[in-house]
Amino acid sequence: MTPTEAIQTAIGYETKIRNLYQDSAASTQDPTGIRVFSLLAEDEQRHLDYLHHKLAQWHETGMIRIDDLKSIVPPSRVIRKEMAALKKTLSKEDRTDEKRMLAKALAVEMETSRFYRRMVNEMTDDSRPMFARFLEIENEHIEIVQAELDFVSRTGYWFDIKEFDME
Image (tube, rainbow, N blue to C red; front, side, top):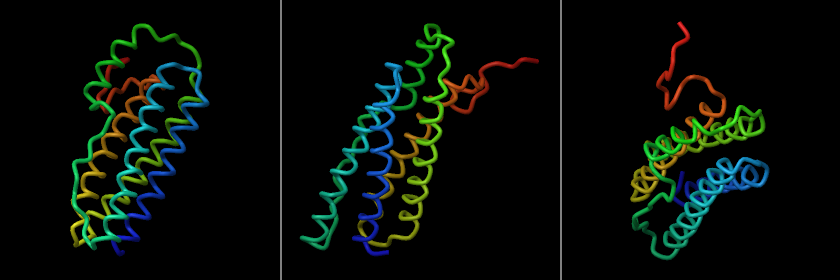
């Protein structure tokens, strides 16, 4: 895959997940869900802006300079702490729609992460570090979305750690 094709494909993935987060933020009634989905949508928009800039850079210079790509989404440890505090105040209301949206987001994040992993393994030019950074960010998104899904589903797991045992 050429760098142009790889970046254009990445733009497609980032657009898909950004749109999903925007739709989810607009569809949910839960203030926490709105905040999380909006923040993730904003982060994905920043990814899109970055990728469009890198595509233009590639076309103009034939090179991709790796600028620092920061995520505006707090690290999973911060999300974990916030969710632990919310746990005491959340009602027992049905959160089926939010679960459905989170499950769909998780699937798309995993698909996007697989693409970035493939690019890290396949690309041999100076775009490889860029894709490696995107892989790190998307893996963090996966962890956050999984934690949110576990939380609203009340599975007893929190970031893949069993919170309680019924035995």
